[in-house]
Length: 129
Image (cartoon, rainbow, N blue to C red):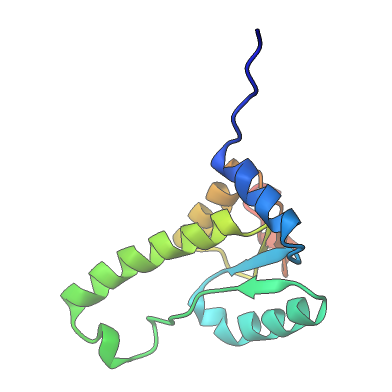
């Protein structure tokens, strides 16, 4: 007697997206110094019919929510975890900007480890090119 293979969480998510007829989901990655470019990419991807998720906080800009250095460090860890969750949710990744720092490099590696296609607004910065 053979037993059916159980679906992985990733396969269940893909099936659910298909059953719900969801458009493709793209996550925008990159240094928050490119927030203006990320907003432009968001507009273009949305116009193309995609659901867009991107960084929601620019911790390089002053704000009372991260004015305390200890709280800011804890928030940075939580935001990094949240962004990895966005990458898991997404169907593809769009890296914005002409600079790749350590955090973005780690996000690209994580996305590729999950088999997510990665596109670049500036393909020359692809660490694997």
